[in-house]
Amino acid sequence: MIVWTVANQKGGVGKTTTVVALAGLLAQRNKRVLLIDTDPHGSLSAYFNYDIDNLSYSLFDLFAAEHPSRELFNKAALVTPFDGLTLLPSSISLATLERTSSSRAGMGLVLKRLLAEVKNDFDVVIIDCPPVLGVMMVNALAACDRILIPVQTEFLAIKGLERMVSTFKLMHRARKDGFRYTVVPTMYDQRTRASIQSLESLQQEYGEKLWPAVIPVDTKFRDASLRHEPPSYFAKGCRGVFAYQTLLRYLWQIDEIEVPL
Image 1 (spheres, rainbow, N blue to C red):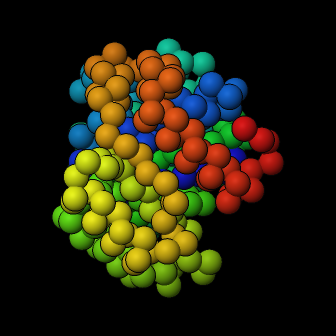
Image 2 (image 1 turned 30 degrees about the horizontal axis):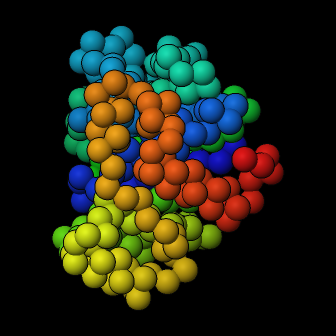
């Protein structure tokens, strides 16, 4: 099982779209995929048409439990309408963890321990993060094998990337092997000078950490979300899906996944 965390300390850069697009492509290749929504706003859960205010169980219950169990995981996990895709939904209550869990030991490793319990059930886990550094992002970073950082190709988003990389440096001491991360340029529009210049800046600054391609602006992403379908199910031939196929092959190669795509 491999775990990818999709994170950026700036919102609106394509995190949830990246999670869903990669998950859909993996599921269509008969991979067992677990999606984890750690954002209290629940964008990933809403994408699949789940109302987080009306769920009996959620990720919050696993954090609130003194000893999160496999039984509790099974109660919280939702089988989506798409074969191979399982969702561990968010809850607005996750926003309270910062003040209610500060005195509990090991709160930064809840997800890592949980995933160790279900490692034989899934091929790939993809974690969607909130755009703030807190207990949920710390958990997501601690649990993953690689961090994917979607970055909109515009100036302010690049500033958000700088904060994200600074976060890795702050947390580096707590993780002996450091963090493996890949920067993913998103919402690229070759017609605009801003996109072109931003991409050039990313290439100069991040070198081999930068995925050597881009996710283009594609209105099919928005249309797919309105239908609550992964983009590759909604419009498999669109340029955005093709770009995510290219990204998936790249990640598959650098993370040395044994089962080929």
